[in-house]
Length: 67
Image (tube, rainbow, N blue to C red):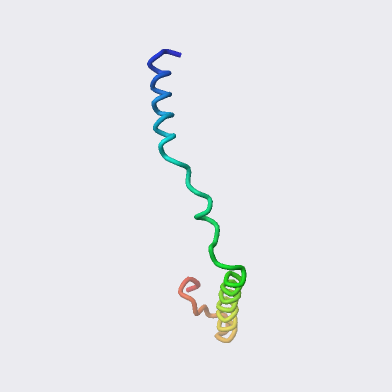
């Protein structure tokens, strides 16, 4: 490996070290367990309502994504 290539790689490595890795804490939800569960149940309820509406309309989709 030539000296120029070694210096180049060392320089690139030093630049990469300046950019810190993303913090994992920003991916961890900040809501409490009960708040997240409530949100899950709300989304399940919405899905169930859509299915019941579809059944009531003889299988015709009522949601824009299903049309």
